[in-house]
Image 1 (spheres, rainbow, N blue to C red):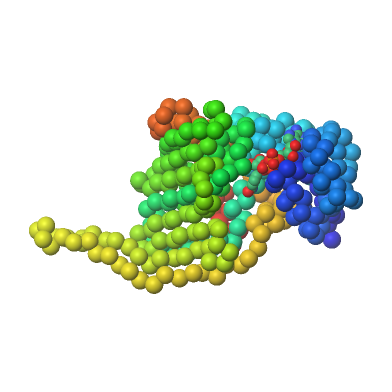
Image 2: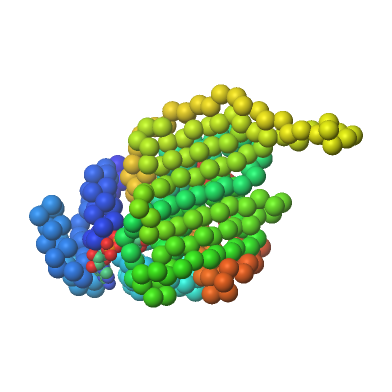
Length: 361
Ligand SMILES: NC(=O)c1ccc[n+]([C@@H]2O[C@H](COP(=O)([O-])OP(=O)(O)OC[C@H]3O[C@@H](n4cnc5c(N)ncnc54)[C@H](O)[C@@H]3O)[C@@H](O)[C@H]2O)c1
């Protein structure tokens, strides 16, 4: 029996309490402390978890409760200073998406974690979700043929963030899923958008990721829509998938439809598209909370000394894609080239994407 990992959570706003609930319920984990600069939030958390130490002072939190690991769920601009102090204090660190405000900050955190031999995990939650694992399984089995394009929409009357725009807030979910199922990085990124409510903070964006061989993905993100939409369409040469994350049970539907051009024709009269309509089906999906799977994975990596599937490196590449999207926004949607940091990192990250696919199944 391994020693229970002592965990503390910093940031107890909207998302932090979900992490608190999950870590609290996991075996081999002792949730010990909470930290938030807002005393009202701590007062609320104390009513739910009176046994936990809950403080506003981060250094008292880091040095007080003898923590092995810290979970950071604050606004993004605080991720870097909090994570750096945490790693410097020798704690394994779990950071909410996106990892930090810049790629330079991500690189520094990766470097400290490596030097100190600590686990650094980024919460790209959807890679731990059953529907995404099922979609990857269907695609890996070749059921869709070659993927032609992916279209993703994540819209609602959203929780406006002050320090990041809607692309940094919502698109990491779509980007992580898209990279995971395509198993490669984009070669260029375009992004257009507009700030309607808070000056200079875009609340609606349209992003395109171009991949090799003409494949592409589009991601629409909005905090300004009357209806909540969480939908992704994956179009393959043989079949297509619609993934609706708002459905309780039937989240994935596989459509046996395709359009083909005749391979040979002599006259225009002979030319006609061939439409194939087959059966659609709804695969069975195991019901489990993705965040719980992510929290379990973090503890497992600490206990086994393993690198997480969503490591600091994957957090860095995500932030680099978001930086490219911001650059494109500043250039009114002009394409911005993207290459993984180094060819070694490319191979390593490519490899990791496949490890994610293999290990998550
Ligand atoms: N993985 C997901 O699906 C998912 C979903 C929602 C949010 N998130 C991420 O979770 C993080 C938090 O988002 P949120 O919506 O809960 O934000 P929030 O604003 O609701 O909560 C943040 C909390 O952090 C506290 N805080 C701010 N600065 C602090 C500091 N220096 N030290 C301690 N506490 C501090 C605030 O008082 C607040 O209670 C963000 O990184 C966000 O992107 C992830």
